[in-house]
Length: 319
Image 1 (cartoon, one colour):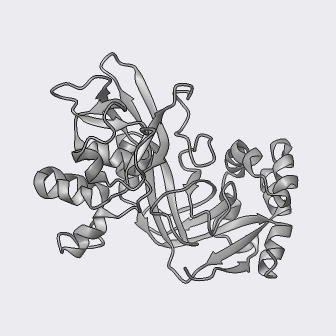
Image 2 (cartoon, rainbow, N blue to C red):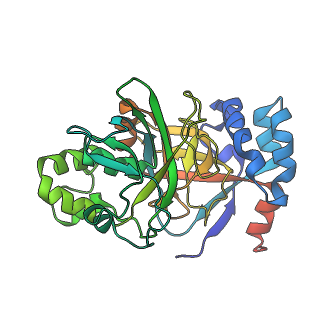
């Protein structure tokens, strides 16, 4: 991993800063501000809920810092799937979503869990499509509409301890699709059209995600992120916490098509989100959000807002 470098910017350097809805960004920041325990953040976190001038608040208590590690910026998108399912397995709903078995050996692969029924007896719900079950794990959360019309909310519980492997990159390496054309929609279609080869492809991602029911999550709340609070469509991003602190405001400038210049909040993480200039934008719930999220693979830049004292210490090399 390349060593990160830090460069303090001015707010005037942020393209579109003055035109953003800083109140919306501040409201999202406040949702997780109390989860930031670093004492250098305490003054800003404590004062945020009472601010009547959101833009002024950010400009007074924070400094924009460009964090780089030699890798180009990459924005992708994620969403909360909404799928049909059943509490009971039947001829239609045959593919399980599992809770974490208490005695599962860490390191069991996706294939072993499936073929050896290592999580048998810990099914939460059953889905009709194995591809949906796979991508539910990629997203890490979901809404399952049951036959009686009720909705089951699922959140991330644990993983099997094995690294995430991009099946899209595997298809590119095989020459099935070019890097600029691969997407979640392409992968889903290819796997469904090639069921045997598709099953083997999905098994190449040995990482397996277990879920938990979120019985107390309100219908209009987003899924739970890494900070144990709901994420917000269009304002929450997943980042690499080795480079950017969770809870930090982050200014993003996503390139065309559909450019986006907006103050987001780093409230989530992801297995594939690695590097100082890497972010996954949360686009919301359902098929429309999924279509948007699946098409995002864009360059640009992002600049984290850090409390003044934290920014000064990083740039000075003080940890």
